[in-house]
Image (cartoon, rainbow, N blue to C red; front, side, top):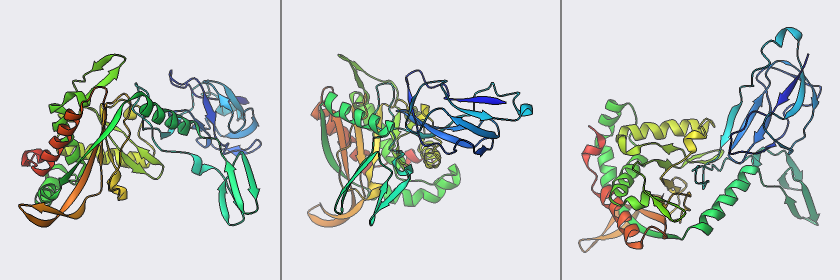
Length: 371
């Protein structure tokens, strides 16, 4: 019996999708659960598995074609006795999620690009991805590759963020020695009690929450000519994976202990690595923290995730000479950056907000550890 392979039902905010590369060719046998093709929207990349074992008899759509919900894209020949439950939708898997500057209803975009999935072509000594067009003059090679739908979305939102907000960045430095000493002093007791290792990111989250409580406008957003003040704190935390950057959101972070925040970050890190962070977990967020320090970044100016009004950039902690009480001493210093929307956040509030984070990190309270 021949059955139709259809595009799954896309979300209401997605009008169309783009087909990736077919993993099976017409005439090939497939096994139930095999990923037939990746379907890319501007928010996620979905795997479309075979709903039954059989033979893929015909491809109705080609790589790169635009498709819509429930559109038939291929035909599958299956055994008569295995067709009883074919009326159900395939178990579509969310393969990659996006999480960077996003729409007002979605604090998402992930740098999980599929460009690295393109088949490689070697020209001379240079390895190129499969391209729509290539040109070569002597040994000066160029290639032209269409942006993926997700990359187009990222480009659109990055421009939107810069064009629709008055973005400024202020900086400060923080002596991380008190946090390092506190962490070393209580690391074993913390792990024994809570079953999770004590990292550094949770301290930055807690310090940001203290500052956000003092300066609620930094946790606010712009909606037309209104300022929307949020009575909750949903913190997006950047997590790097082989697929790229993912920014899942810690909901109601102000209600969580340091241990709970650590558990959330670890859980997100594991699932982001496996591509299992859901779109819902990437949606929203009232404030974000980006940690370029894991790559050794000394300083950067992070871009705001609209409609948020600010983002904190954390960088590498390195030993540096600083002046203390008239003496030059070596301290583990970290440069912090706060990019903010000057339409609603005044410079005074931005500077004091960052100073509040500095104060919290340089004078951490043992109560934060919940010992």
